[in-house]
Every structure is written in C-alpha cells, then in structure tokens.
Length: 481
Ligand SMILES: Nc1ncnc2c1ncn2[C@@H]1O[C@H](COP(=O)(O)OP(=O)(O)OP(=O)(O)O)[C@@H](O)[C@H]1O
Ligand SMILES: [Mg+2]
Picture (cartoon, rainbow, N blue to C red):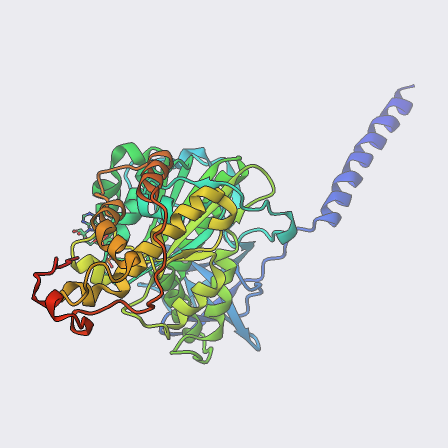
C-alpha cells in the first residue's frame, strides 16, 4: 500500500517536471553571449564576441556602473553599439552583456503630471513613477485596415485652427515654422485648452532651458495634471533623443489603448531626424540628401505612422513641429514631413514680426481631413473666410499705397471692409481659450453676408486708370489696410 502511494507521488512529481521541461523547450531561455569593447570612434562603440540582434539593449560595464547601448549595426564579427547614456569613464575591453530584449517603455496612469527623460526616469523630483504595463519602444505593427476612420473634430482651443484648419481626432499634422515665431506658445495653448483627455508632450533636441519654461510658465500646474512631458534636450546623446520621441509615442499608445483621446505634441521632428542622422553617419551610412542618410527618411514614417486612430475608441492626434526657415521648400525634412502628414500649419515670420499671434499663415496652411470632420456649413464658411482673406492679401500693396479706387471691385471693397474683423478673428492671446462652439459662432457671424456679385472687370481699377477728369478732381476715399 505504502509502495503504491509512493509510486503515485513520484509519478506526479515526474509529470510535473516533464511539464516544466516541455514549457522550457517551447520558450527556451535566451543564451547570453557576452563580448567586449574593442574600439570607439566618435559615439560608436565596436564590440566583438557578443551575440545580439539589431535593436537589442546591451549593458556595457564602466567603473561608474552600467551604460546602456543599442545594437545599431554589424560587420563580420563586429557589433556596432550606440550608447544612450554618458560614455565618460568607458575603458578598452569593457564587458558587453546583451539583455536579449529590445528597448521597452514602462507606461501607466501614474505618468500623468510627470516630467521624465528618454529612459523614463523622472526629472521632476517627485519620486519614482508608478507604471503598470510595458510597451515596446519601437511600437507594435498595426494593420492599416483595422484603423478607425477620422470622422470627428478635436477642439484645440485656438480659434484660427478650430475654425479654418479643423483638426480631426486621429489626424497627424506638421507645425512648420522658423525659430522664435511662436511654436512653443502655440503648443502650450493647445495643451491647456484642448478637449483631449491626455496630452503627451515630447521635447526632443531643443534647449534644456525650454523644458522648465514649458512646464512651469507655458503649461502651469493645472494643465500638467493631465499631461506627460518627455524631455531629451539637445545635449543628450542622439540615441536618447531618438528614444525620447519613441517613448512619448509609446506613452500616447498606452493612453489610446485605454480608450482615451490623446493629443501628442512633438517638438521637434527635425531634431529627431537630426539625431537619426548623427547615429547613421556615425556607423558609416553614406549621406544622401543634404547630408541626411536614407535611414532618416525611413525613420520618419515609422514614428509618425504610430499616431492616429487605433482599432478601439481611443485616438492619438499628433502635431509635429518642423523647423523650416523662410520659404525653403528644399529642406528635405520639411519635404518628407509634408508627404507623410495629413496637413500642415505654417507659422510665418512676417506675420509674427507684425505682432500678430498666433502667426498662422492661413493661405499656406491646410488640414487635409477638414472635409471629413467639419459640417457642410462650417466648410462653406471657412472657404468664404479664406476667399475674403486672400482677396485682401493679393491686393494689399495696391490698397496700402492708396492706388485702389473703391467701387471698382465689390470683392475688394468687401475685403477692405472686413479686414480688421478677420484679423481680430485670427489673433488670440495665449491667455484666451476659444472653444469650438464659440469659434463656430464667431465664424458664422463673420461670414453671414452673401458674397458680392463678381463684376466683369477681372482686374481692380487703379486711380491712374480712371479717365474722367471731373472724378479725378474729387477727393477719393482712400482705403487703407
Ligand atoms: N499668442 C501669443 N501672444 C503673444 N505673444 C506671443 C504669442 N505667441 C508667441 N508670442 C511671442 O513670441 C515669442 C517666441 O515664442 P516661442 O518661444 O513660442 O517661439 P518658438 O518658435 O518656440 O521659438 P524657438 O524656435 O526658439 O523654440 C514669445 O516669447 C512671445 O513673446
Ligand atoms: Mg520653442
């Protein structure tokens, strides 16, 4: 009897052991083959002996501790690594331990109200960040057919955008501007006034000073409560800047998966591209367009495509700032961004110089999904506004020198009449919030009058062309802009 129960017990034990072994065979533990650093050129580390896949996270031993580095290439038996931390103190023959895992982002509701760096560590001194899930830093592959269509508008609290460049939930836009024309202030206004549930801000490759300015002065404590800021300033290694942009996107993906309306603001996409250029050139990729290697143009859509609508309720509406000085249409990053985004908002230095804020160039900007998210009436009003606006802009020189004679073209007369009201509509102090409802009411009041009849003369009449001498003697009402 005793023997039988012992046999049974042993049998059960063996069954259990075999089950464990079978499970291990199904998911074998990765074999870690360590290596050592043999060379370092610029920022690139060259290692021999280690076995790691592209994108894997490795730990390099330094006297100060462990330095994180990502596998970015290989040649024969040499593996190229790009560090994402401080390389000072690194010595020859340092041990390299592959972790056999790609980089991951720790995400969770505890991120709300926090400022973190590109590795996810807090910068705000508020203690450790509570996270409850791990997302891949490089994103999950998504089926483009499974994405929900963009069909609803997102209120960003800025009148010119809500009214004339309506953004759709899940849209990706570029904010094209030179330096100092009001990008940060506009992003701050959107963060404070949007009706999105969560705002994720990625400050990538900009000045370190701007991080504190953005969180304290532009955002303020109230808006910070529903925001997450990922900051990797210009002095951080290029790999960390790339990771910062990807981490911000992973965090946005997490909130989208919780069914929330997310607004992702990335300042700037150009600095992200420049970080990739630094990495690619360092490992020997040949430069192609204006010093940018081809991998830069592959990286941009990989990042941007992660935003947008998901399969569920949640959405990521993303705005990427792109540095574009003047009218440089040749800038390869601005060009590439224009092609992969669903619209662009252009900030103009001329407009900013005249003290008009936000300095949005309405004629050069377009929201490609406005047709799907705005009502028929709203679209008609926006087109009417733009027509009056461009009529004035086209004839501005003539009007301002007093060469245009009132009455010769009713469209220009109307534009002159309406111009101060159009400017009032477009200008907005950064302290003022304008909801979509208020904006639509203002737009409808502004464009309520029907368009004047178009007269036969295509060109506006100038005073010099007016033949009647009797009329020329009369003092003309001079139109001024
Ligand atoms: N809505 C606004 N109302 C009043 N002033 C504004 C507004 N937007 C911008 N400005 C002015 O423009 C200046 C520059 O703005 P901001 O710092 O946002 O520019 P930027 O494009 O982010 O600059 P950089 O390229 O240096 O980062 C601000 O200091 C402020 O004086
Ligand atoms: Mg700025």
